[in-house]
Length: 413
Image 1 (cartoon, rainbow, N blue to C red):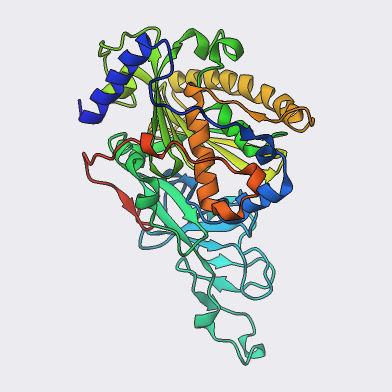
Image 2 (cartoon, rainbow, N blue to C red):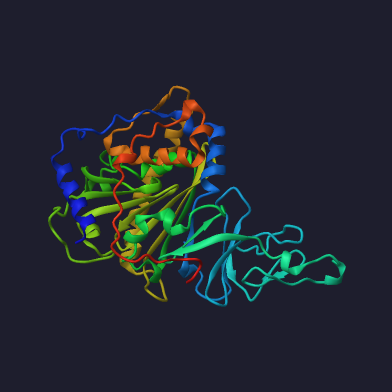
């Protein structure tokens, strides 16, 4: 057990005995309700958060062979085409033909020998180079080398495919920080996608994200599901650099000091508590029951988002999903819907005019930390003064500790 694990279990023991907010922890300012309803703030988030951040676009198992591709269309920009090259590298480009802007591929996913636009048959190789133009003599000024597909930054982390539209953004490893290290032993690169879910929901994307960053609500909203398995008052909440965070919650069926038999994911933290990570800006990952569920909250408008879930667990090969994994997915569906069915009503209340702002408690500090990072990403001076969140949690960020090598690559499979 590493030093970080020791600290987490020490905090869980402290939480079990805690009867008040720890000395020195600041009272959190009210989160202005307009951050969840106003179009001007939403537009700032789109321009300065989502267009400049690393976001999850898939898993390497979705691109098993050369020429395998998928289209990522979750952001307010041209859809992004992700393809595996003949050299095994995974690359990303805007799915926009350099002739007249038609989509290069129309299907959401597939496999091909060449990327051929379905409008006029301009063709590109898997490196994005323009390799064929019908009636090329009709274009006397054409420079093929200058008309390749426009690339998008693409990097892999433990088999997870991330894209970023900002050339000036830090590399993925720097952006992800300690979570890259924590996921290093989970076997994600050798895993297989075992769960898919997508639903449009009438709520702001942060409203959805908030519901998965605390367990204060589980006895009320999930009394027969997670409320029956977790001790909501015994939770170690860790703030990590760049808005990320970790939550470890005591299981009712396992004492903090017990070490149950192994499962997936392995590791004492995962076997002795319920673990969930938040990868800023829009992803929460609860672990357990044979899979990691990557829950993503994609903004559509100030009062609408898409909730997408991709589950990744140990590969099982050909054939249908193993029965135990299928059962775990069914149970996860139930918990997920309990949260989703509550969100539209929350958003309606936020937009009613009667709501001033959110009063957050100590257990909800991960929400506040994510808001702080949004303001830093936008630029505090660009945030309307009445919507700003005072930065007070920086001194509570967990110190990084290097325990194992990282495994991020620029598109290498």
